[in-house]
Length: 296
Image (cartoon, rainbow, N blue to C red; front, top):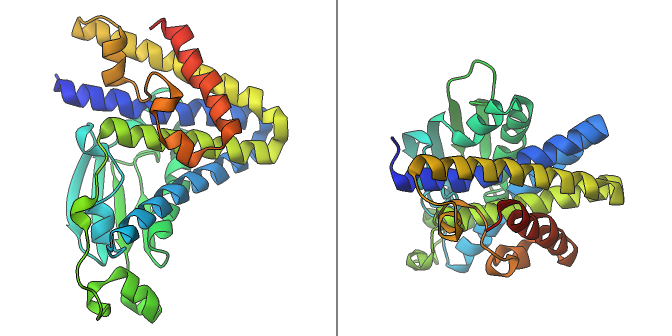
């Protein structure tokens, strides 16, 4: 059996998968190919928001925006969950790794949504790296969402020869004669709850923006339906988990296993990544709805 900390991290990670799956699924089913296009644009925005946010945080600390810093001082809170990663090597110029188990993809495939899993992998990975380091070469020739695939292959390269002199200074100490050190010790790597919460907020906000830009007010009830379906599925998973662990499904359990806090105001990323319209949607369709459905 998994360690309790891994079970909790997987439960928290599930929140991102379900919000994306059900909101994306309903948009695609309602609006067809144009819906898929809107979902893909939302995923690209989600990835670019994450990458550019990390870039700003690193630059504020005087850090170079290279692949080594992206990996070791990143925003992915997955180390606590049951992902199975195989390190090739990570240097300032190269990030070469494999993933042979991804619960994020597994949960979507289990629910019959391989297409949405494939769409996520196709649209997220390139802009995630390239919004952090714009000249990065991102190769993802194989990923676990593909039929018959047994691994994700990440081959990402950041070559000084593809950059301007100013870009080289931004990315590498060796090309910055004025570099006197940075304040990387001040960077706070997010834990599973904080990191996944922020990622799920960025996802919900990005999908809301891309879909309402494409379909106007007609998208809102579709997104509401998706959010409610995501929560219903999530609550059932958490109730089942509590039963297996022989613990009560109560506020304490939810706090340790659910991606969001009890109130929207407790999750600061909404203020940073969403406007008032989106926050109102989240308060009504995620926070209030969760309490109504879960009874806690």
